[in-house]
Image (cartoon, rainbow, N blue to C red; front, side, top):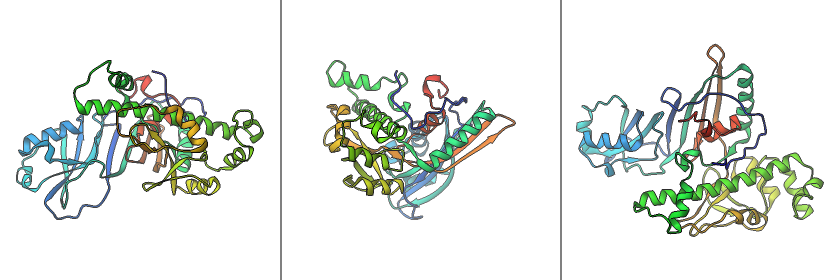
Length: 365
């Protein structure tokens, strides 16, 4: 499959070996809110490895004698990783919890809370990743790129996991929408449609990164030969300090959450964007999806298709927090840690570091 992700930096590909495994890939969930310590729901802080979240829920359900749907969770976590997340149970399950043992699941803490944990009750995730076979030269490159990401952020692409093992889920979604193929399972059909939306979002975002790279590399008089936009608009966009250039009509959203609004004053909004107060959004095409205006719409409209699913907007740009890199020269290992907001992909950050598709090398299988 042709890559649909263009990254901000144009450095030569950085070489490292990455294989997703519990030893080298650790994900720790950051809850949206502190748990109250009292209430009708028992909250477990659970560490698992080599299991999907669904497999873990089924194991807990069978042992505790409760239905899977009674167990609350904020997000799905990788199978090929060590992950720590919170799940909520009905309080009546507490009596059987003391006898629970499983080689791939460990209960780290228990507390009480007033409500069941729901999907999306999540602030973000903390990642630890170990890269191997990293030369001292490439380690220095990685540190420089990590510093850039810590200062400027990164494009909020969907990772390869969204598109299936062969990367063709969106093609199947198109066939289902056209009546050429049938998928009877409702959840699978919804997932396929979301993969189609994600693919179009990535294509749109890649185009916007391409525009930003041109504005970063060329002078206004050279840009006039590329874009048939008003000279004053080109100058105003060129003055923006952040790498990702806002366009007139962009739909912005307060960061890390808030309401949507249209970028009317580029000078003012670009300052707020650089200060991490707001961020631009891109389309997830579908029913009731709000669209940009002006020049931003002229770009966006090429990535809008009629998808039989609810539409929405997604942040185009996010800022990883607490970005750390540590090189172990004796083993040629490079260890990195960072926090991402919910819905963002660690493998996208890895691809930005490498400036090449990680999935296509089969290093993440």
